[in-house]
Length: 221
Image (tube, rainbow, N blue to C red; front, side, top):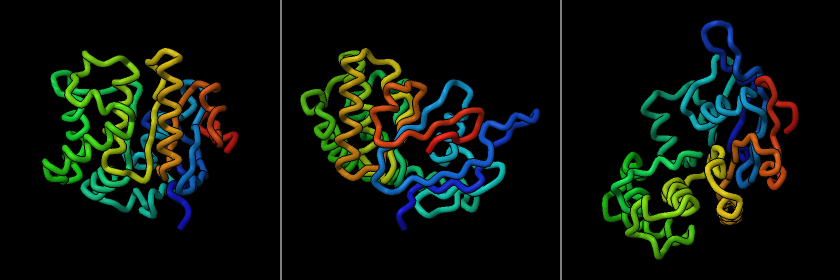
């Protein structure tokens, strides 16, 4: 089985006749580094929600890691997300009063990892993203780039097969943004499948593969 992500005729429609994703066929293999790129309103966020199992398709099939998303219960979907998918968002979503280690460890709560093991994995993940000297720092004591690295550490602490990065450099200056892209490359080199969702064509062009969306359809893959 080489396909981690498999969309077949995947469609997502909303009340009022709005079709955000229109009969998309797409495959992403284990170990790929790719960008999903397109302007605002092209369907990127909808695709992210379907691939991330945050939503189910209205029609067609979405398979993630061999699982048909539509056939899973909410509990099963939550378990799949917790164990196999990591999320990084443009907004860092860090708890302000919590240390870097605590923020990362909290991301493992839903995977049922015991507390000591959560802390061990959190520290290891922070070392992995170059923040070994910032374990006890709180978000306000970190730069924007460092906060995004904490968010990435939280996403990869559970060793997910898939990392979904939604506009990961959107809130960063160019230097910090470049550092985050390099980090994503390192994680990919370590075996993680990385999918970057962005409207930034320059960022997308740095990825080995670009999946272009327009008006809910894939125009390049």
